[in-house]
Length: 343
Image 1 (cartoon, helix red, strand yellow):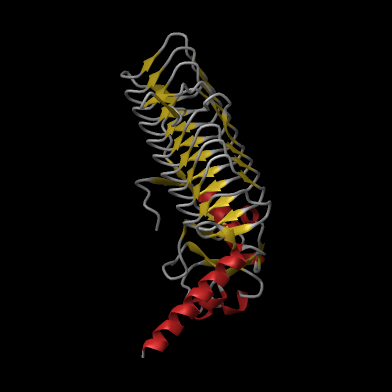
Image 2: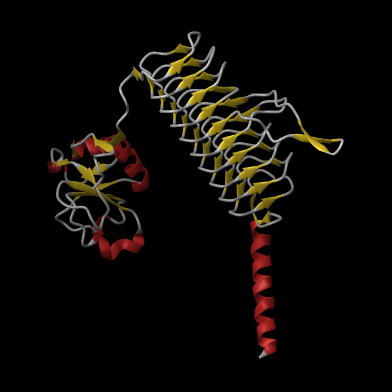
């Protein structure tokens, strides 16, 4: 059961409402007015709860379902006990996502400005915003409607933030223009200096970073991740990108739409990603690389050269996934042969 101390429960819902939300078929229409008040796993679901069954490997466990209702595929419905009301759809995982979004939500703060917040008189704040304790909003900042700026966040002069955005506690936003529906998690640093130095007379001299960070719509940037502003050109994060915690995006990088960067990914400066590039955890990129749309980068890979669109690569230096598997197989064979020769 979800802890309602932290999340509000918007239920109960009738099974007819559940069917509509999930785009599912209620097998027994006489049960349309029955209600469920919570979502639970197959193993834990009980009375007045609904569960989801989508894994063929769980057929035996399905026979023990104690929920009021279960959403599953037409092929797996036969394994659900007769006492459980069945709803069927093509994709129960997607149905779970839809129902979960309707059932639960965070306790969003009511529009307010905390007494300790410091807002420059020239800043423009849209309607229905919440500004938390000790927030600092600089000169000429523009913030759209229905935004939440959590405690301790700092938004530097001139930044623009669209509507329906959330800036997490202690996050820093500088030199940035941001679209709508973005979520910047706690501790993230957006628009700080890029890492640029030049050796002059035996000293590392800082290269001025005079670009910006341009963030599209519906972007999430995880906790303690950093996106540096450009040295001259802008750093650009495309619509719909998802950036995990502890990710580094360097100056002048450009991400297309819908890219996914998993935790501890590090991208050196001036790299260009196409649309829907996926990077596994701890992937690293040399500077000035071009990564084609739809490319997939395996976890802990090191990229030293460009990647063609749609290619799956892995390893350090990264190679196409089939080549990587051959390398692994060859090394295992060689190691086994070496052990055998020593016996």
